[in-house]
Image 1: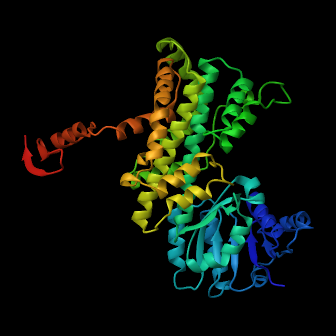
Image 2: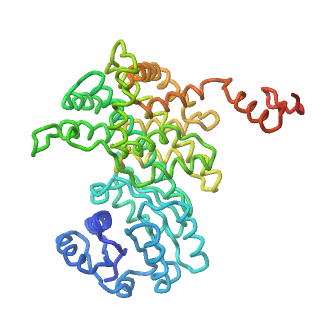
Image 3: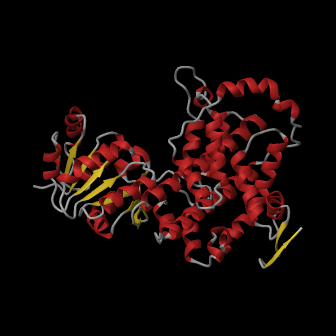
Length: 468
């Protein structure tokens, strides 16, 4: 019996998705460049509802899939994906679909789609969120590509996706690179969310002097209510974990140097290209980059002496203010991310549905949170100038939480405690909330050193020649 789908690449994510498909009753053909991976995987798949068959030869693998074929590639992005497309395309038929399920640069996805035009083969860029656990039991998936490819893949995608109150957390978000772009921005928001959690942890550790277990308990209290989210939930677990070898809190034996795979940086790059501010995400990306300079920070500690040069804060931040700061920061980071998505949608003619994107992030993905329903409602309601933070419900949320964010940032700054993402979120909010900003001075400087005079543009935007 021909397979419903082929999965090529049996690494952590590929094998998890293949098992998920088989468990949902689909016939799955699998293959892998390292053929010795296939046998152990087939043993793992025994007993699942659907049949799983392995093929060492690429042609045998392709012939085992029913036409028109859907083949999911879970291999490294970049050159390996390009090489695979070149190798496999001559073996495919009109109407077949190649799905790239890796973390690919959307620009590459658009280029690959363009190259395959006229071949009869469809190319899909699909963002998959939720890690290995999500891939195995229900990820959130953001699918780009043609309507034809989506029609083929949709029954399987909806079967394996995470569900929120019965709604599958997967959608065809748009053509060519749309799926990978939405996943990139998702990851950028994830960077910001994690950084703000780390900043709250730092305040409670360094300013309040709390033990990890007590900070973890605070995150546990936040796991119910408006701050409920996967990242807050696992923050409690991280902070309450104990290192078996030393008996110390696990967080105290983890090197304070954070890795990154590049998607957060891509978000910032694309935001700048589109003329959008992703300052909270940029602060998070920058903080990760600087964290890798451990030796420099150790040396700088004795030279810069933050504890001496910065006056001590009169009081540390209250837990209520920290909760408000986290909630306001999360809203503002998401608002920046959605603004980037909205601008990209217009620039690339994608017609992204912001409400639906918020909905498919409600389960299965890393940034799933209680706020996403509110974001979806905001996009379906009154949305002045297309800005999520101007929706009445979001504006009310910010009115109640920004004062706490302001107090937290002020207290941390006075104490010399770094809070780059929370500070960036607050500055963006304050820049947005002022009808008269300071860019007139920037433009005045630009005009003067560029022209030794000024372009006369009044505050209504009318041009009146030059003067000066």
